[in-house]
Each structure stands twice: as structure tokens, then as C-alpha cells.
Figure 1 (tube, one colour):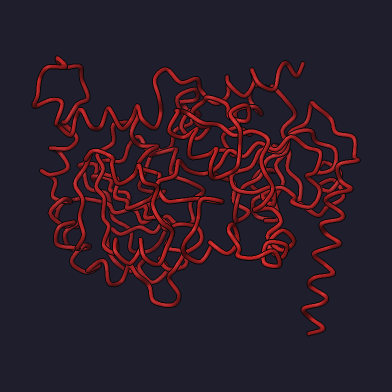
Figure 2 (cartoon, rainbow, N blue to C red):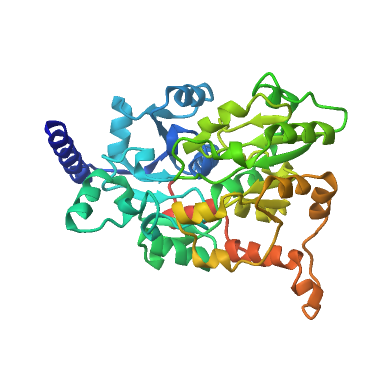
Length: 425
């Protein structure tokens, strides 16, 4: 009982600190950046790197991870520990916060008064934030009763702070973000994402899946043959309902998969969500199966992926403009939709753009080199609109879904943000 009372007192004091932080004067020529799980990744990373190079505004990364701090310091980039004197000072005096999830990516208690730009980390198919009405997170965003609402206002502080601005590439995303984050149209900036734009503007900084990169992940990495192996990326969504059992052990026959990969000269890059990355630790002993869950992100080499396997993750949306072949592996669809978050209604109405597998045998068929090649050669091209075969084809569907998410001629994130923020010189 005493411990519970202390937690309430601490939460109230923190809320008071947040309220008072609005009184701090803030410099309009200074922007702070941070990311979830204390990583250096995702949209905020690429916006930070781009503006570091163009000198548009003073860019400061904030982190609680000393390894990240040392990494950026070694590159002569400005970075501070969150609770250092400089970290606190800049959190109180920077005009702009750019983050991937919540203001706690930077500092959730000192952000009041800053212009908060949530770059978010995905274009959603499953319900997010205040649209969540089922699963473990429903009580955070849609608590039942006045007392429960007040409790979440105190204890889920950063989740209930509305961002001032968000990027949205299309009318569909406008509607989703407006609902999920309780935004009006003036708070949405029509733009693509920094993570999908960065390597188009800085192609020389793209990464390759090289032998040294792969072998650095473990002793059982593939020894590259004379012919470059095909790259298969598996990036499933976070299963926020799993408790103890590793769902990927029942979804894959890892030994058979490994044997197939070796025989077909393929590399299987395993990229689990940061919230369940530890589940990949026990899967590192199989040849040609490489755990890259610890990588910052995949955008530096996404253009070289021969096949992307996912389920409900929005990574496939980021891969659409690259015309990457996709395979959906939804081995637990019924369970996921029952015990995890609901999907948005539009997701069930999307036209087919790729094979959908529900068991390992079906998936293994899609990993055959000829199946991947068939998908890869489906070029998106203009064909007469009265061609019935084309209108009903995966090719046309792929293009239609790409435009649904990304719009047409959508400005890149850097240009759009700079126009909104204004000249910093």
C-alpha cells in the first residue's frame, strides 16, 4: 500500500514538472532527436543525419544508451545523455522535438512548450494509439471509467500527449493518423518519410549485405559463394499478446529452412521487432539464418532484398516504392486478430499484391528461387485501362496499393518539414 502511494506521488510530481517546463524559453534554431528503445534508428535518425549534413538547423541526439552516445561521438555528431546537465538543458531550451514513438524518446518530462513532431515508425494496418479497442494496450488508450482515465493520464503520460505535427503521405494515412492521434488536418504535413527518402538523396551511403557484415552476426554465418546469394528478409510484426512461448518456433521448421537456404544459395535475415528481439537469440545456430534484430534498421540495404516476408508489419509499405517482391506469412492470423490488436477495416479490403501463406509448407514453396524470380519480374508498367487482365492482376494491384499509401508526387520529408518550419538561417 505504501509503495502504491509513493508511485502516485511520484507520478503527480512528474506531471507538475512537465507543466512547469512550458515556462522555459526555447531556441527556434535547435532541434532534439531520439528514438524508441534508446536506438539510433528510424525516421528521426535519417532526419537528424540529413540536417547534420545540410546544416539546416542545429541537430542534437538525446539518448539513455551510452553505446549509442559513444557511436555518435566517434562520428563527431552532437549527442548527449538524457539526464546529463547538457541533456537536461537542451531538453528545456530546444524549440523542436523529433521522435519516432513518444516524447520519452527524448525527454517526456521536459517537453512541454516544445513543438513536438511525431515521425512515427510505420504506416498502420493494425490499430494504433486511441483506435486500439482490444488487446493488452486497450486499457492505456481507452480505459473504462473516470478513475481509470485519470490513472492513465498520470501513469501513461507520454502516450497521452498529442503531437503538434505528423507527416502523412496520402489521404488514407490522413484519416488513420487523425483518428489514432486525435489530430486535425492542420497538424498533418503531406510528405513521405525520412527513412524512405534518405538513401534516394544520399545513395553513396547505402549499405550492402557483405560477407563481413553477415559473418559479424555469428559463427554460423553463410560463407558467400562465387554467385551472390539471394537475400530474404523476414520482418514480422510485434505480437504484443505473447507471454512465454516463442511463437516462431512453431511457425518454422528451422532445420528444414536452413537446409533449403544452403541448397539454394539464399540468406535468411531474421529481423524481429525490438520488443521481442530476444526471441531470436535461440535461432542463431542454423546455417544461412542470420539474426539481424540488433541492427539499427534495414533501410540501408532494403533496396537489395530479393524477397520481403512479413505479416502485419508496415515494412512492406516502405518496400512498395522499391518494387520489392513480398510474401505475407500469417501463421497465427486467427489468434493475432483475437488476442492482439484489431486491424483497420481498410486492411481487409486491400487487393492482393503478393502470396499469402498460413503454414510453413506454403511458405517454403514461395522461397523457391523460381517463385521469387517470377515475382521479381512482375514489372509495374502502364497498360491500357480497358485491359481486363491487367486491371485484375497483381501488377496493377501493386501499383494501386502503392499509390493508396504513398499518393502521387508526394513531397519528400525533408523538403516538406523545412517549408513548414521555415528558414533557420
